[in-house]
Every structure is written in C-alpha cells, then in structure tokens.
Amino acid sequence: HPQTLQSPAMATTTAPQRQALMAPSVAAVSTAPAAGDLAVRALSSGLAAGAAECMTLPTDVAKVRLQVQRIGPEGPQYKGLFDCASKIVAQEGPASLWKGLAPALVRQVNYTATALVVYEPIRDTVVGEGNTPSYFQRLFAGGSAGAFGIAVWNPAEVVKTQIQTERTKRLKMIPVAKGVFRTEGILGFWAGVGPNVARSFLVNAAELGTYDEAKHRLKPYLGDTVFTHMGASGVAGFVSACTSTPADVVKTRLMDGAGRADKQYSGVVNAFTTILREEGATALYKGFVPIVTRKVIWCGLFFTMYEQIKASLR
Image 1 (cartoon, rainbow, N blue to C red):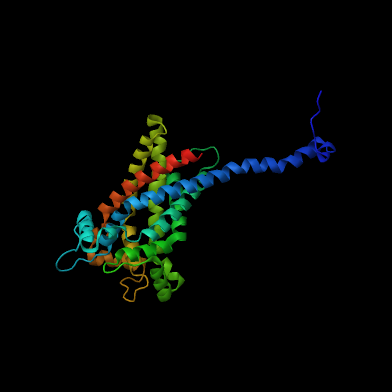
Image 2: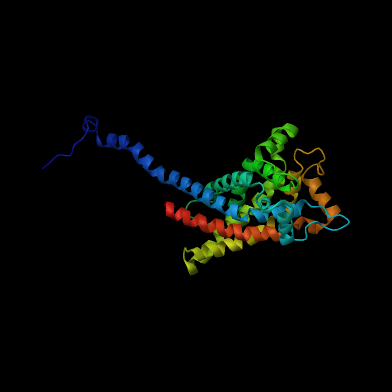
C-alpha cells in the first residue's frame, strides 16, 4: 500500500500535537468568510449609493433651497418642488441641479458603506446568536449604524450644503473646505453634527430597520426577488421621510451658517425654537415633498441595486 507523505515535523509528533499545529490554519479559514462578507457589503453598498445619489441629487438640491428660504413680504421664492427645480434651471442652468455632486458622493458612498458594514454586526449583537430580531431591534441597529457613519462623515455634508445653497456663483469643494477651516477651524466641519446624528439615527432606523423588517415579511409571499426589494424599499423610504424631516430642516439651517459671520442660530435648541417661533411648526416640514420623493426613489434604487450587486459578488 502507498504511504501518506508527511513532513519530518509531522512524523515525529503525537496526534494531539498535530492537531495543535493545524489549529491556526483552521482558524484562518473560518474567519475568512466573515472578512469577505464585510468587503462584499462595503463594495455593494458603495456602488449602489453612488449610482442612486447621482440619479436623485436634483431633488436634494431643491430640498435644501426650500429649507433655507425665508418667507418675505412678497411670499416665498419657491412654491414647491417643481417650481424650485424649474427656477433653478431657468436662473442658474441645468447643471445647477447637480451642485455639490463631489461632496455628495464622498458623503453618501462612505457614509452608506460604513452604515451597511456595521448594521448586521450591531443587530446580531443586540439580538444574540440564534435569535430572530424584532422590528424594534432592527430599528435600533439601523439607527446606531447610521449615527456612527454620519458622525464620521459630517464634514462632507457641511461642504455639500454650502455649495448647494450658493445661488450666484459655482463653488468647489476644496475652496469651501478651506473657508470653513479658516473661519472656524476643524470644529467647523462638525457644524450641525447634533441634529445630523439625530436625523441619521431616525433615517437609518427607518431605512435599514424598516427595509430589513419589510423584506423579512414579504419574502414568504414574493421570495427573495427584486419585487420584494422594491416593495420593502418603498415602505422604508416613506417611513424615513416622515420621521426625519424636522431634524433635517434644523441640520440644514445650521450647516448653511457654518463659517459665516452672520450666523442666525447659536445651536440646535436655538435653531429649533427660533424656527418654531418665527415660522411656525409647519416650517419643520419644509421640503417634505422633495424629501419623500427623493427618499422613495433613492431607497428603491439603492436597495434594489445593493441586493443585486451583493448577490453577483457572492
């Protein structure tokens, strides 16, 4: 009978010793899929977020303009989503609907990839091994993942907001960043981080948590198909817009004032109370139509592309 070839080291060891020598390689193999899954989720979410952001940025530009406008004696400059978009095109050119694309991509791709990578580990840690997560646990995990991601990438949103609110000239990312740093230092890049984290907690709780829950409930009827992904993402987008708009308005106002000498608000509480006192409660839902439009479209594009890319990479 042919003999099995062994190295000299293996030939002179006992069975327990041979198991100890082989243990590191077994451990390395067992951890590889987890690392690979993280990379797949990061790449899938980054690609999907970039594509969705490019397609829906015009609604974000209109939303920002609606949120920062003040109502004067002659009434508001913009009367709604389509009026705002048409006036921007007429007065500033069609390309103005994609103002802030560079920082928007930096922010959205990195922030979304960060949130998607940490969502499942947070959810599984909260739930415990072998248990099915509840809707509340999915909401908490999604909110925590989004809050962490935006706290890291808040500087890109400060730059994006200032570019989008400028009406008279085209601003570029680097000069705007230098202006913020020169006026307020490094902390200027975290202007509005409080309401932004609150908003992102609500947005991602609604988007990731609701999408995960809706997909879980639709799969028995539709299977793990594109129809399930589209239906779940539509529900997630609507819930997200309803819960996050007030924090989004406060965040936009604070970011618009970063690095400016004539700041209107001194902080989150001051901005919130001033808006309520001077403009009424409905002002906290300024830009709701473009927000819900963008959210439903963005979530539909993002989650559908994310699931398809992720499946093709695995």
